[in-house]
Image (cartoon, rainbow, N blue to C red; front, top):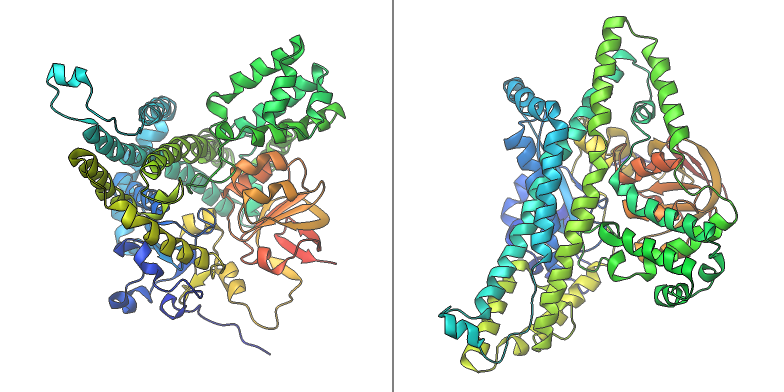
Length: 605
């Protein structure tokens, strides 16, 4: 009988894929495992966060993980003083993100409690007004970012600037606008975590109370007590469904039944009064709801609906076909609420009047703050980052126009700090009327980096590094990523493990059988067929429009509060998350039995 391994490999012993040697030079010094820190780094358990960063980073794209990790940690450690949890360290290895939670020494926890109660309590007591203020702050930042424009430099300074004695030229504005773009992005990431961890804390407090009061209660039963929410994250998909219903009601089904793209469909609709009525509704839905990516907002190549209208139009075409048949498109929210209230009532009857009051109070708070756990995704990952990447691409294309690199979006192969001397190179060449240095340096260097990034992308990341702790009890790690003691043991595995059985988190209830479809990125979503089971390293919240096609979802990573779990519960789909290896062990076309109530996936044919 084979023994399970007790430890994963050290990152220092994991070689780079062929052709990716020297990849460490692509990233800042503080993001990679450094040889002189090996003894210290090998003492920590690192897991791959493919839930948020499933792809290899181009150098500029590390901005998302840098800001997210720093701000999450600061709110835990410095703002709210969350008693059991500090932040999370991260490193990039072979192009992928690995994380290691930073615990709080047990003897320090008690001293943090009064600070946390005062600070978190202030937010919980003033949640609605503070959240309304939060939305204003986030909107203002987005508007300021959206107003930035990067343009080619003029042949000469405007006469108006000479006449007024301005004394500066457009290069100063270009450099200042670049710095401002970076800082505005940072600002909204600070706002991102102002409420997020408190949403998790309130749910975790309710979860802990339920576990103490009802020792045998399944994790899924607790999660179902807060489902049936109205989250703005679902609004883009709901807008598409409403547009599809309107098309059906107006008798426009034939227009959408073609294989045409958005431009052709809109042109055809413009010919009739009812068609023009629909186009008005389409235009009204775009701001802000088309500031939505089919990815997750962390990569410069993410495709946003407002920039690629064929994407939302394609989803609408599918929805119209279903609406014409009389299918129900919208989420089964009423049924979810009935089930939610049934579970609450059953468990509430087991409590004394005093305990029931506590139960209801904690549940009430969890329901108030819970929607933000998903809402933030729309405002930050989708809307903020959509504007941010649009401006990054705009600047990259301006510099491409000067011959600085071969392809319009090649600035992504620079770190953000490398861009500042590039801008000064442009300013100098323009200012003195001489050639810039960049065209003789960056095209060749970017091609070298591109080959390394492409080589890194040929290998999937290993799930973890080093020896895991005997017990994983850090609540955020369990709740968000689904990394439990049991799951890590399964990842370590042995030769005796049944290759046809996978275990994960029971993330959304129900049992179904169906054909597997492996999806590793949003560009493959059009391959999904009606009634298939979606199997992916991770899903994005924006994949909602395909949930009407599928029977269930299975992911490699993710806990009870991961986006895949929450979205599947709200759409009434079975889900098993955190399996560790489903997307590599399962092949498209296999017949699966997915039990989202027990967290098991079986290959049955």
